[in-house]
Image 1: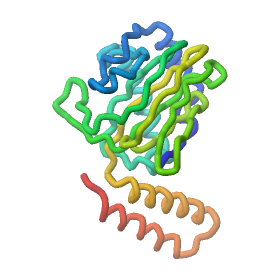
Image 2: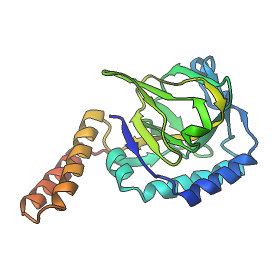
Image 3: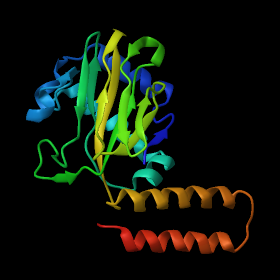
Length: 225
């Protein structure tokens, strides 16, 4: 399931991100890549210990907590602290699959990466190229969203960032361990939740309560805590 979530960051939060990132100490993005990914990764990244990265990570996490669509789509159990990257002209990230397990920096905690997320921080008019390409059973999907919008997709997906040919592409990226591990089950729950929310705006029929009960009983059956 590939889900676009618009307006995760409002204009004020976006402005705060841009102000901090403009003064950031960018480093080689291969510092967080595995041996295979490092061979195809050419970008810049904020170190996880950078004060700006930590402050902006908290800002993004707060915004995620306020997004009903994110909570419905991801059913998050653990969220990896967001990281930040920069692609200038000539930079790209070749085809790769994200690591299955990530350790949260500075802790003994590990999480399973069920979902990958890219939060776009640059407006598409500010750069050329730089599309996120995500492969699934139906082909390759090009994603290039407005600043503040985010895309969620299975972390098991083969994906890549196309070369930036002009301008600068800024983004936050991170991973989510979902309460529901299986992507198919999580998709059914997301679709059911959306349908319930829509029907509830049209009628107060008791069937809405019944459908809500079905949703929670399925979540109860499939959730891992």
